[in-house]
Every structure is written in C-alpha cells, then in structure tokens.
Amino acid sequence: MNTAKPRVSALVAVAAMSLLLAACGRDKGDERPPEPGDTAVARVNGHTVWASDVKREAVAQGLISEGEPLDIGSELFRQRLDEVVDQKLLAAEALKQKLDKDPVAQRRLAAARERILGDMLVESVVEKAVNENAIRGLYAEQQKLSKRSEEIRARQILVASQADGEAVKKLLQTGASFDALAMERSTDPATRFNGGDLGYFTVDVMPPAYAAALKDAQKGALVGPFQTEGGWAVLRVEDKRLEEPITLEAARPQIVRFLTYDQVRDLLEKLRGGAKIERLTSKPQDLPGAPQEPASAPPGSDQAPSSDLDDAPPASAPAQVPAKK
Image (cartoon, rainbow, N blue to C red; front, side, top):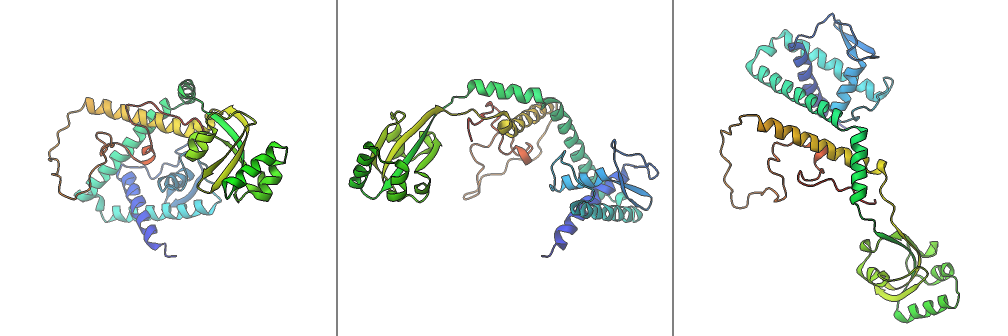
C-alpha cells in the first residue's frame, strides 16, 4: 500500500503547527516539561520533543481520543514521533528561509492560532460544565420522563400452512414439548434449534402480524396460527415484563454529546449576541437543480461546530435518551 501521500499531507499540517509555535517565540533553551510527569523522548537541534507533543499529534490525527493513554514503546508512538521530528526539521528550515515573513504565511499562521485558541476555549467551557453531576442530573431527569414499554418473551413454531399450524397447536394443547416440536416441524432456521425462542421484545419492533396477534395475549397463552411473510406461526407467550431502563453507563456517551452541544451552542449564541457581525456577501441565488439544504438543518448550521456533534439533538429540544438499546 502506498502511504507516501497521506504522510506528506500530515507533515504539511504538523509542520505548519511547528512553524506557528516557532513564530510565537518558543524558547529554545526551555527544558521544563510542559505537563506534570511529561517525558522527554527526543531532541532535535537542541529542542526537546516531549511525550505530550507526540500524543497531541496522535489525537490531532484522530488515532487516539483525548485522554486516552499512548504507550511510548508502541509502534503508533514511534511513527508519530518520527512525524513530530520531521515537522520540527521542516519548520526550522522554513524559518531559515524566512517563510514566516511572507504575508500569506502570516495569514495562515494567524488562522491556525485562532483555531487553536477557539478549540481551547471550547474545551475549557465543556470541561467545567460536562461533569459527573451534570451527567447524572440529566440522566435522572430523563428517567423521570421516559416511558417503559412492555416486553414479551415468546417462542414460535413456523409452518407452511394454516392446517399444519392448527395441528401443531393441538399437539401443544395436549402437552407436547414445544422444544421438540420446534426442532421437528418449524421451518424457521433462526429459532428451531433453540426451542423457537424469540427472546424478549416489544411489539412495536415486530412485523404487524405478530404485533396484532400478541396485543392482548397473556403469559402462558398459545397464539395462532396466524399468517406471516415466512409462513404460519404458532406462538407461546413465556413471560411479560416492563423493559429495563437504559443504564447510566450506556446512556453516558449520548448525554455527554448533548451537554457538549448545549454548551457550545450557548457559548456561540452569547458571543454572537455581543458582537457586531456584518456579512459583506449576499446569499447566492437558488439555481434550478442545485442541491438544497435539508429543511431540518438548524439555522446557522454553516457556522456551528461539527465533528462529534453531528448527532446532537436540536437546540430547542431536550435530549431524548433511548429507553433501551
């Protein structure tokens, strides 16, 4: 596989970051660890490369998530270290050639600085607001609002005709083993070898024929035969219960995503409300056949952060945590 092209792209990006740091005047002789417990892993022309520099590069490339450890003995670390060394060499050569004095370079460095500062602001706001108390509070609120559906556990025997279904039902009514009949007569390959067990489910996820047949069925009842897409089904209701609520840990990722979205939205609304923004370009006219923005897109979506918040709920609606996965 040819990996030269992605590597060059990565080097261009990380070299720009190194050039930005150099342009900001990072002290060559500063050997203090940038983070507590940081480890020096290389030195390039007198400049120390720290483990946190390599880890930050891995996070920037999406290879690990923020807060995830990165073993300095791993191949992933070694590869990113090589890239950080290369970026420092490229940045040093760019400074030697005075590329940082070029107006285009200065604009690009300024844009990179703004992105970094904006990201740091968002991270600081989110870190303060998205804490364990907020997560547990929203989870408790959602549990109060959520409705628990009834779950049914049933077994089925699927046969070719209504007459076969009536015969199976009669045998079951006289005490025949459901497991044995499922193995012997059911045509459903997914359930015949486990006694026809369908497990627990809510009727809303089942085909309409099943939902109609099980609507008022009580525990222990034989249901059917009724026609389905695969044949004629005979069911026995094994159990009925209220579905278990989603656990905090299962709901945590969605809650964190919503709280993050909420904080970023509020921050941007506050900043926009206090700023004087003048748009100097007119909205492009709609052309026949041109792609249209979805009607459900939130206002100002072209200015809103994307990345991990694409699935966040609309700003006007509270988070809806699924009751069960």
